[in-house]
Amino acid sequence: MSVRTLTIDDQPVSVEEGASVLDAAKAAGITIPTLCHMDGVYDTGACRLCLVEVEGIPKLLPACSTIAADGWVVRTQTERLQKYRRMTLELLFAERNHVCSACVANGHCELQTMAYSQGMDHVRYDYCYPKWGMDLSHPLFGMDHNRCILCARCVRTCWHIEGAGTKNLAGRGAGAHIITDMNEDWGDSATCTWCGKCVQSCPTGALFQIGATAGEMTREPARLADIITARRKKEWNV
Amino acid sequence: MERLKLATIWFGGCSGCHMSFLDVDEFLVDLIDKIDIVYSPIVDTKEYPEEVDLCLIEGAVCHEEHVEMAHHIRQRTKLVCSFGDCAVTSNVCGMRNALGKPEVPLEYAYVTLADTNKGIPDDPVIVPNLLEQAIPLHQVIPVDHYLPGCPPPAERIKALILHLLGLGDPLTGDQLKFG
Ligand code: SF4
Ligand code: SF4
Ligand code: SF4
Ligand code: FES
Image (tube, rainbow over all chains, first blue to last red):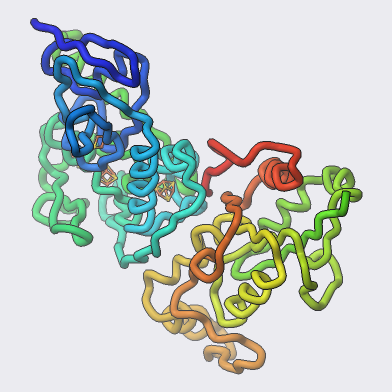
């Protein structure tokens, strides 16, 4: 396998051909903020939080879904990138209804953590206050559209780790939303296996265990990646 | 050194941020020779004074009186701080916004759920008119500092005050956590 050598924030790093800029940054010990990226499923570049600058390329590139190339000079922490990251986060907060104090994920939320780690102390855009409901029809799990950031981690998890294909994205723009099967109540789904993997994958308070109240939803998305690794390496004998 | 003239006020909030302010405990005593509390629900001044150095405003802007008072404060105050999540994001107060007109939650609270005296209070002299939406303070007046948290922990309030007295760093990292 051939190797690609590039520089990230002045640090030289070599990765295998096909590795993403995000993989390369990780190998160099550099953290790039991400939200829609999740180890174990393919990347879609949905959240734009991981945007980086590459010398000689005028547009910003998403580190998670850009293959690292030889000789690239990548920057991950410029003033421009920090400005855009903050704007992206503020838009995510303005788009739906995020009430951290009353949210199941308060204190364990990737969006919330990302916001304060990027210095977001308020949202400069007017909040949209859209009217979104909840799906509480499933006996074990609930969906609160008010908290969803449309990262589609749940969709990719349901299709490619569980293989059930229950969760999907429907609609466009501000009307885009997560649906179950052909837009049915989750509780009526004939395909959902009740595995709960989507709930584990969710970075926000949008998916949760029924009965969880404010601040009670913790999760371990890394365990989903463990399943994939174990399958690939045939670590389980069945 | 001249003492910092501090004011605090609550708009649409639960007063939890002010409770948290009292939780700074003996730090209030340390502040005695540095700070003068010139206007606050915890002191007895009736009129908002001129030339206030810092005002901590708790709560979202929910009705017409809040808007008026916000402008009044801005004119008479050097530094305005959004104090707590309701002021910073509209938080719980803003949960009514997605339901539509303010009459919707009012109807639910004062008519549907009321056991006696059903009816929405509507004397404008006593009860100010609600705005169409409960909004963050910085959508009404320019805000200089943000102190998130529901409520902001006492340590965080202390850190901001020390910073504004020139005795500490600005808030960073999880000192900016909402919720
Ligand atoms: S999903 Fe996260 S950011 Fe949104 S309200 Fe819940 S804790 Fe806050
Ligand atoms: S519980 Fe499992 S099968 Fe059901 S929607 Fe979630 S990931 Fe898909
Ligand atoms: S429900 Fe959760 S995992 Fe699914 S798209 Fe929304 S935020 Fe992402
Ligand atoms: S993590 Fe790369 S676009 Fe979301």
